Image 1 (cartoon, rainbow, N blue to C red):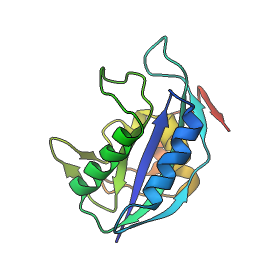
Image 2 (image 1 turned 135 degrees about the vertical axis):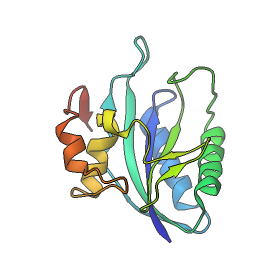
Image 3 (image 1 turned 180 degrees about the vertical axis):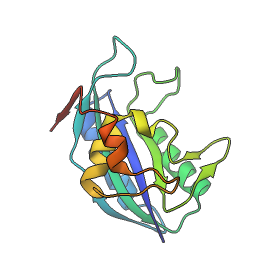
Amino acid sequence: MERVYIGLGSNLADPAEQLRNALTALAQLSHSELAGVSSFYVSDSLLPGQPRYTNAVAALDSALEPLALLDALQAIELDQGRERHERWGPRTLDLDIILFGDRVIDEPRLKVPHYHLHARPFVLYPLAELVPNLQLADGRSLNQLLAECPFVGLERL
C-alpha cells in the first residue's frame, strides 16, 4: 500500500455534495482505504465567469498502480456526471492524483507530483492539513510551496 493524495474539486450540481459522494466512492475503491480528508474550501475559478469551486484533499492508502488508480478516479468522475468540454471548464467533479507515495511519475496521462501543485492554494492548504511538514519526492517541501503561494481567494468551510 502507498499513501496517495487526491485533490477533489467541483463547481456544478451542489459541489459540496459532489465531494461527499466522491469521498464515499473513494472509500469503496478496491485495494484501497480512505485514510483522511481535509476541510472543504471554496475558491475562485481559474477562468473568469465560472461558479466558485469547492475543493478538498483526500489521503488514500492504495495498492493500485498509478494508471489503474487514475482510471478508477476517472470512472468516479464519469459516474458523477463529469463531461470534458474545455480545459479548466466547469465540472461536477475533478479528481487529481497530487502525490503518489514517493514516486515521481512522468507519463503522458499522469504527472506526479501534480504539475501545477505549486500554484494551487486550493490544493496546498488542504494538503497541509493532512501532512503539514511534507517533503515531496522531487525535493521540494510543502512549507516552501505554501510560503510562495499565499492563502488568497480561499474560504475554509
